[in-house]
Image: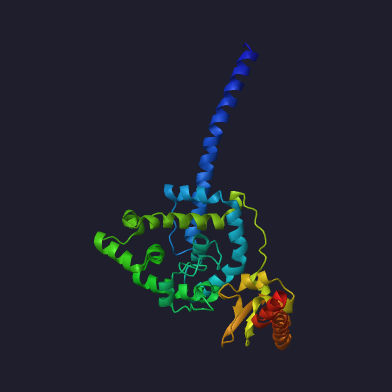
Length: 330
């Protein structure tokens, strides 16, 4: 029996390497696709929302998965706000995955938006805020209050779900308004999101796919190479204090030896960087600062008052300024 020639072996080796080189991406793609489907199935099994993985959702997953810095930032701020949201949603039996709407709407930032348009974690409009009973005046915009706005949204989700009995339609109604959704359903005689999708306003037609993608990526961030980092503030390291006198952020920060930015970050609903002298005013503070405040609140108020008095003495009045000007003329 003749042996196999070295030339034959070399050619076979060449073709084997070539085959593996071209087939590996296909094998890898199939593996990734299967893994993606398995992960989405797992997400669907643990939720009442009914998650699906179609080509549009895959496209949105790829798009959002590239925004690593944003994903890491949202996860960091989520450490501060997601526990609060989950606690409120649990009371009304709202799927906890709806917390990720804040990623889409505000990047989990309660200070997002402006007074004339949508604002807060949930980007609530002025008109919707009024319907929800959220305060919005000279001093306070409760659309930016994490707890108050989340309570209102939780009740709103529960109300919408009673109407539609479907979480995909509930999310859609939240996005475009239940009045608009009702008209679309009545006109086309369908009560399934994916059947109604082409009839929705343009800004809302991809919303569900984007939402599914955000949920998927936020739950599987490690597979996208996202390196999480600890947020500056954690829900377990915060406390609330009752404010009984008018108090500015800057004076409070000086009295408690903390950055003013910390008070601003944790209390975004106060428009004037100022706690008004009203009943039921509370400030969120880092635990240690809250402890100092609670031990002797009068000390903090007196410190702030002294600072104001010193500043009022050093600021020249209009009369003294005019006298100085006359002296210079002489």
